[in-house]
Length: 503
Image (cartoon, rainbow, N blue to C red; front, side):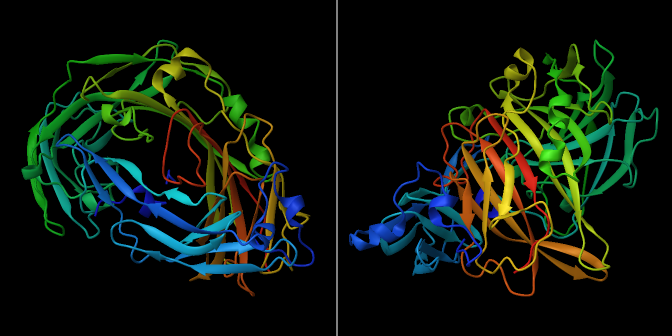
């Protein structure tokens, strides 16, 4: 089955306190509803329910199917604010996409869905999503594609190839390093070979279902103000049907789309860079980029967004963090005229984590903005929401490495200084080692509208080491604690990375 946001956990991308921890009243917003303990004394019992419809938006027609929840671990937890103890209420998931937890006391719950926890007073959860592309099968084993084609504009250093297929929502990039990659000045491809399984979204193509294999030349150009960028230039469209694990050969001619467009941005890169030390005092700046793309018109009225392939403009001008006014950037547009143009700006940051003498693991996060492309052109591009402030593990500053936090630790933070967060997502990662390298595994993702979470039983294990990523989200009209896979525009996100901590 084509992977949905539910299975990927996007994007995008997805509690009890010991004696040294926080009391419930300290850890939650002052506006939070009555906690589960007082509700239990009133004998109010409810049922938790959820549905998981996945709508696939494709050129061949839209289709809605349930996401199979039959193998999902479903548990609703309540927490006693006096003792800090969690009580588990087992539930079930079904193949028809529904989940159910009976006999749950009213009040705030931690609804466990696999490794994801939805922290909410709600009792009805929308676990569905809207996806670009038909329901399809991902390629997981090597599946070579050989391309021979004429009609390239003379190849230049900095150009790259973009693979996409609009009907199934397949996409990926081809850079140098593959057999037959074009040399400078080449006007054709002669036996270009790439592994389709290496693409970012390698949905198996079937021409009988209306799939078209498209290969685009993304050409390095210079804007009106002298800023380098890459833009959609020429496209090869051809039929291709794949069998996983078997090679396929295609040929054709690159042609230039008739439709064209322009895009310009006032990019306040310094505003993103100014937040670097709020991500973590030791965070390192890495990339900064803007993408401009388009998405099916049917998604414009859905609570979903696509700001990825196929790209029309990709802007990575230099490694500086100074502000840029690009001036006009032109591109050729092979996408349907009715599609809505969207844009994404992101500034990347990293922090390294190491266990003992093992080679460190470099964790990458970003501060990003998703909006309609017209919004990027109309006003300066800068963060919509910043990182949270003053993160704590229990009552201690979370940027330092900590031991003895207990298996029932809490995380708390203050609101961002920039923008307004509508929700928060806390990702808990466990560190390990393998062959001399530090490894990282995400063990929990907690969605909340509060400024704290308590880690439920089993998230932290004695003898292990962890760190957390605390994401602040700005996404008006969509509550990530009750609708975790819904996406709307405008949208902003920023991350904080803690130090390491262990029980």
